[in-house]
Amino acid sequence: MSTSATDEPARFWDELYRGNAPTAEPGVNDRLAEIAADLPPGEALDLGCGPGGDTLWLARRGWRVTAVDISAVATDRLADRAHSLGLSDRITAERHDLAESFPAGRFDLVSAHYLHTSFELPRARVLRTAAHALSPGGRLLVVDHGSIAPWSWNQDPDTRFPSPLEIADALDLDPGQWTVERADAPRRMATGPGGQTAEVVDHVLLIRRTD
Image (cartoon, rainbow, N blue to C red; front, side, top):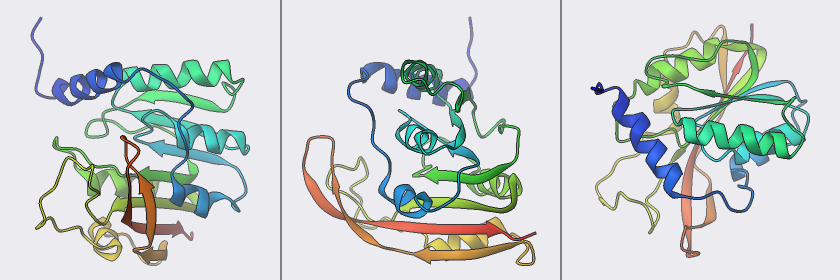
């Protein structure tokens, strides 16, 4: 059976997750925990959920979460974990290639952490769609890398990381309907896959829908 070029990213991520056997429960991303800790629970969308640490953290705090990834291996594993933890009523795991489709619904929080790939992805379009999927008062949280960690696959010292405000400008959102609540580049200590630690920079963008 032949496959198309659009199948290649899904195969890549399936093989990556299949090669990493699930172990301990994945942790939450620091910036999500920092920003969402005081938000009232509602409907959330986790774009690029991966192993599901952010999804599980939100669900335990009363959020109903739609978790999305291009990898069916990742979404199937997350659905199984949610079932084993008694969280199936709060978590819906869906496979989406965001270059081709986007989950239905309205959300009080959309989280996009490190939504980067070496494959073609119309990221600005995806994030713009996410902003339009917000309910009034809802927030879009985008967290990107702002530095190169020692364990990163990309060690090019000339890599340029767009600032949070540059990301916001690329979304071309009507300022009468969306407002930037936060755009900064905080530092934190991070731990790599081999246990090594280093200071890294996050580019944090928080946009609120006001209408």
